[in-house]
Length: 126
Ligand SMILES: [Zn+2]
Image (cartoon, rainbow, N blue to C red; front, side, top):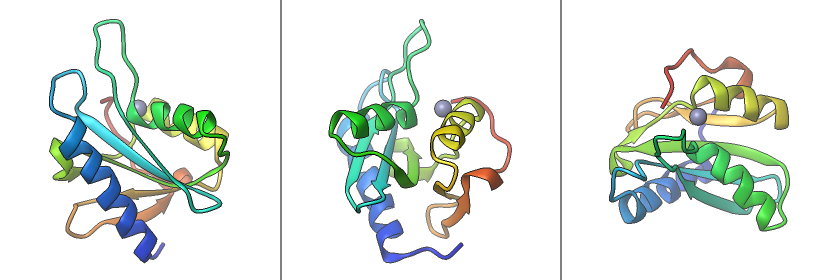
């Protein structure tokens, strides 16, 4: 799938959140998602011994809280916005179940690409 200008903007949004808000061991990843109507929601993960939550899960909750529904595209970044992170297997399942046509931005930060949620490569948990 082709990277659109809005996809690049989404990467920038997630990177900005990571730089601003991921400043402790409790918050290490940020996600930004664009909704079908063009709104952008962002979120950070929560790391805790009890399990915490991935940023993708928090982003879904944030979108619902703000009254927006279907997510169209999502990206997750780590390392204070310096790397793109592929959603973990649990998030892949969750996102695919809720949003079967979701687009996911992955790959190196300097050459990102968009893949359908159904075509994500295998990952390890984060
Ligand atoms: Zn996850």
